[in-house]
Amino acid sequence: MPNYRRLRPPGATYFFTLALQDRGSDLLISHIHDLRAAYAATIRDMPVRCEAIVVLPDHLHAVWTLPLGDSVYSERWRKIKARFSRAVDRAHRPLHLPASKVSKRECGIWQRRFWEHVIRDDADYRRHVSVCWGNPVRHGLVPRPADWPHSSIHREIGKGLVPPDWTGGQQDGRFGE
Image (cartoon, rainbow, N blue to C red):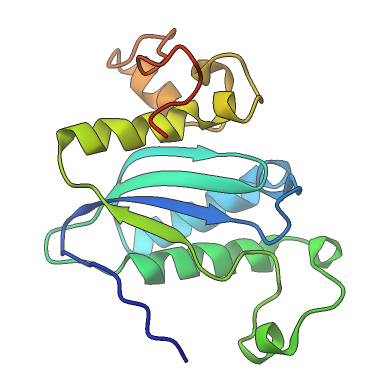
């Protein structure tokens, strides 16, 4: 079994990308209530500060700051994925699973791993928050980040911290990539 090396500074801020196995699916937004419930239950048990998050039809991005002394982000994501998978109707699960997924008690909804990146500085932080909020525009789902309903940009707009017409300084839709 591979031993993946991950940088895990306790209390750090991280950028994550998690994706469904079926990259053409809309399962995350068609079952957004199940994803929100799985997320809330997990964060209640294992708190983080969510700096930014966006949920798209087949993947999500998040920027989290873990509590001081804590670097256990993989367990949080494992619980979110498991709770969501249990909540989703069996009709949305693949009919045939490879033996490797069956042996690990996976239901085949999520890609096995996820991408994580340790935020290095303020510029890196701003760039990755922009990636989160700008992703619906990049994928052609909406013309402006604030038009996407499943984004934490609305929380920041409501607090007056981000203008409703925010583009992240990007006019071409690339948002830091």
